[in-house]
Length: 448
Image (tube, rainbow, N blue to C red; front, top):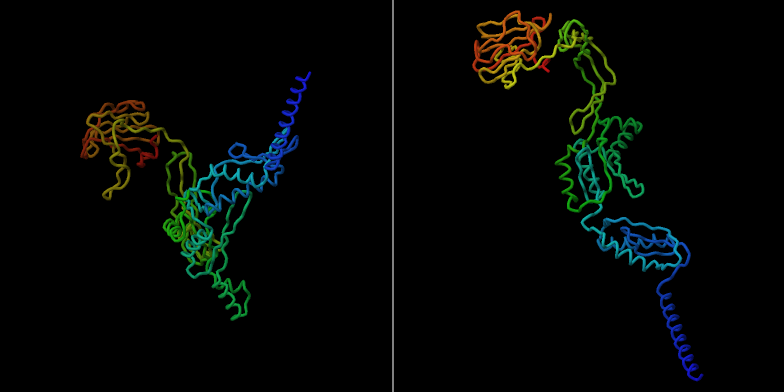
């Protein structure tokens, strides 16, 4: 009995000691952090990994903001963090929460793993396929002003960037306004002549419009620091490639000019497509015009006629144009190259295409028809003429040998002779003509 009592006392003392140790550990733990049991709490994740949690979303957002500020201060600029972060509300039976300071430290350490100090915030100017990265909004403004000055020779205008933020996106628009010197000139003229501001401005301004092309985009971006230009270097690059960012100007103009009336067409179903016959020659008229002439980088891009006074009415050209699809023609040789085309040379009309080739190369009928002529001629040498219908013929010249006879019907690609250099020729080739109602036409109008 005495023995059981002694063991009982030992167990009791051990239990008391263990309880005291647990209480001490709990006190120590609750002095350094807090726990939530069965309540909502807010988990911060970076790159999908949980870095901590706190009891309110406001505290989580504050910790995230403080951590990013600390990163930026260390880098002396806004830094680029290549990770996704989130704050998610969750419920758990028992969970540890952090105070704002500890959560800030944990977020800061994790963000450093994702920080890319080679990426910095910059301003991008882009137009069409051209883009330029500059270090600041003031540099972008200098670039636009410099480009504008090339066409604002009397210092009438200033350009200013306006920032527009939408969520995480920062966009910029430009605004063109009168320069300070122009404002002073307008005020002086108003005082001197006792006229309104509008009247004074109309007298002084010679430009109807000045600005940049619609495709110009300006916005804040993160980019590799190695492509970002600063100050004078950025301005010099923009000026050198100034044509990429178009400057639009428009001037009011009054001038006399001769002008043409629109061509009038008569469509004829007895003629082939590609056949055009001038029925009446044009006569130019004359007029006085008030217009707005637009330029991009000093090159005319458009002209809007506001009013006109016609002194002499023009006479329109009339063209009779064929509408009937022509028969399909093909190149008369397979192994050849075009050595001379249709057109004037040495003051004379070359009436067809010359296809240079090897001696004896087979020459094919370009289109089905009936052979009208197959004989020798002084200038054409051995030649063949094929009639395809009541309007169209083809001629093949300088053959070494004929392979058809008059009256023979031939199909497309049927051999009618062999290439050579007979007649007025300086080398092996086939001279090929297409003739419509007795008039030769450029074969390329009809060749398939």
